[in-house]
Length: 53
Image (cartoon, rainbow, N blue to C red; front, top):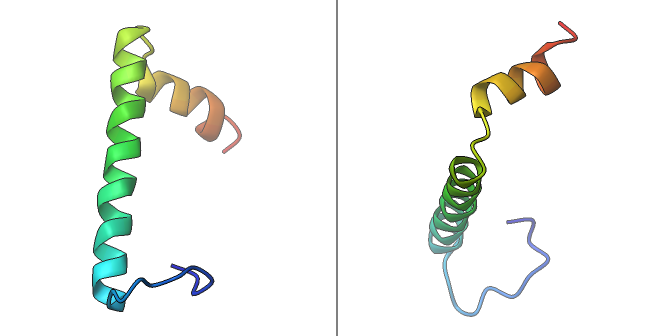
């Protein structure tokens, strides 16, 4: 995404698409982990990120 990696013959659009798919994968894995450990994600986001507003 920053232009520092090898493109392996892929277009900018293909690279962006692959990045977005990986991003979604990581996000979903984190949400599954949160569910497994019964983490209240909205509450913890509010506690960590929104408490200083």
